[in-house]
Image (cartoon, rainbow, N blue to C red; front, top):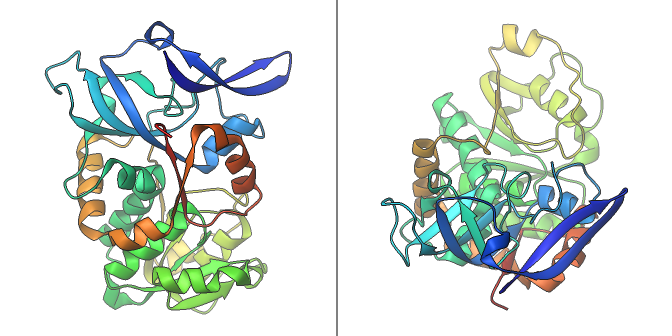
Amino acid sequence: MFKAIVVSDSEGRHRADLVRLDNEALPPGDVLVQVDYSSLNFKDALAVTGKGKIIRHFPLVPGVDLAGRVLQPGTSAYAEGDAVVLTGWDTGVSHFGGFSQRARVPADWLVPLADGLSLKQAMALGTAGVTAMLSILELEEAGVTAERGTVVVTGASGGVGSIAIALLSALGYQVAAVTGRSSNHEYLYRLGAQEIVERTDMEVEARPLEKQRWAGAIDTVGGPILSRILAETAEPGAVACCGLAASAQLTTSVMPFILRGIRLIGIESVRCPRERRLQVWHRLAATMPLPLLDALTETTRLESVGACAEKLLAGQVTGRIVIDLNR
């Protein structure tokens, strides 16, 4: 028997219970994994609290990330004891996820733990790190180099934003961080931001084209802030769009695209192809300053996930929350 959080919904009543399961309760899959760590993402918080329609069927174990060791390989791709990581593939949404001491998943969803990372550090990065690095790779491939100018990051205190700032700074970029909390300024400077931009300034309705300020951007929030970023991005910049924490709506014009050649690039990390995923993890391990990653990580246990989820949704969390399944 092993511990897991199971989310259920009966006649509109949402529950997230800590229960004990056996292997027979797990869904089909090639590989049985002993899960050592998971992480708490925005999507997970919505799933646990029931404040967002994230889970597609009930009952389900939430948790979009997991890291651990192979118990039963079920395939020649892995051996017993191999350290593996899983992010995405609708884990914790339509397939049992990482808020469980065991998981059974298709082999193709797993990647080997990248050299230089511990299992805990892999989960401190998790989906947030994968999304941040995918965004950076897209900016690089669009020609947004460190020499081109400042990259602005929205949702700067959150998981994706925090890791994006640290990675960009480590790669030599000048970084501007957008935040609505003055209490987080010191934290953002410690991550590597050189400039703080007040969120309220970015929420002011933008004209179709504004003064060119940014070489590129990583946007996690959407809505009016993304509209302003597009209007302020310098020719021929690029904007990686990877979240909708503020709004799924976007009001803009074609002018940034046809007059300045701005590229708006969607970042989809859930079904990222395996080769790209391996590239992402290699770059994360090579680039992320690990002492800084450890410093921005809070570790909790499975029993505390509900309370942590409420804090995350209330905007009371900076950095990353890792769940130690063995505590």
